[in-house]
View: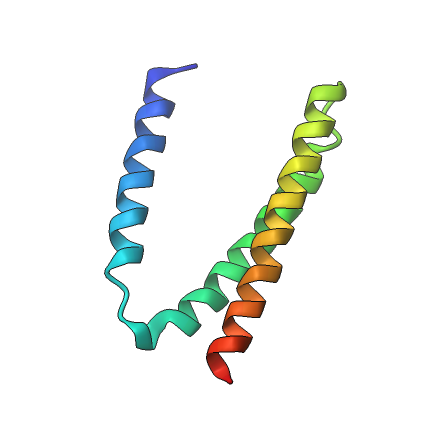
Length: 84
């Protein structure tokens, strides 16, 4: 694995954590809606990755679809609960 890609990933994790922990409670619902939209895009990317040649690409794409769907459904449930 290229060290540059690994470095960018680690920095993205730290920046994402810092941004999410500093969101005030009044912005959680709009943030969850945006997160659900991004997860929907991730689902499309995961579905496209399942057509990669070989069994590994298919299984990794399937796992990505499952995780993205769990994220979308969980986001909608949390948003619905917060709005009640």
